[in-house]
Length: 209
Image 1 (cartoon, one colour):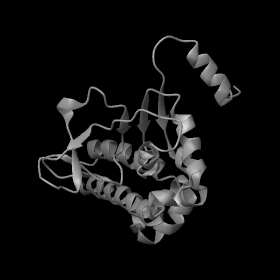
Image 2: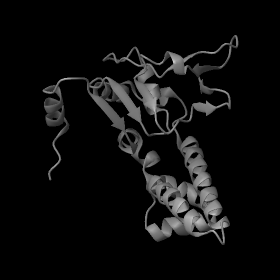
Image 3: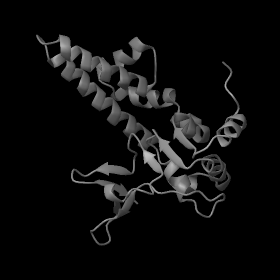
């Protein structure tokens, strides 16, 4: 089946009732900085810090895709825990590798990430915003800050509505804002896997500003 062009897909979507939504994956980040965010480049930077077993999993699956390996470990860990009643530490070791790979991916993205919003040109922001303006809601699986930075570029046309559900913290002059679950009716940006600027503080989710 041949994939439609973006324009044809949008024409079809606009012929239907209701709102349009988008799910962003690694391709959104690679379109801006492919040498930084493609999985092979991230893997080359991260592989020295993988555990020996995690490295063998990447090799066995013949991939550099972190998400594919984490998904395989997550599923395998659940299955192994059923069968490994005589050696339950197997599933525990797999869970440990899963957590370590996720943390390493986030750390590698942070180390490779553009330093500041000004690292991205206005015309690049404009291109991103022209794409995102088609959609009422944005769901992103990416850890990086590119969608967040794009949403903040109010001086770059076109205008896009953005609300990620984070509100002012109770602490005066706090360097962060807090996700308010009871005040998310207007939220239209969702970080499905979290992001580099979002932290679990235990009692609340915080977004550093």
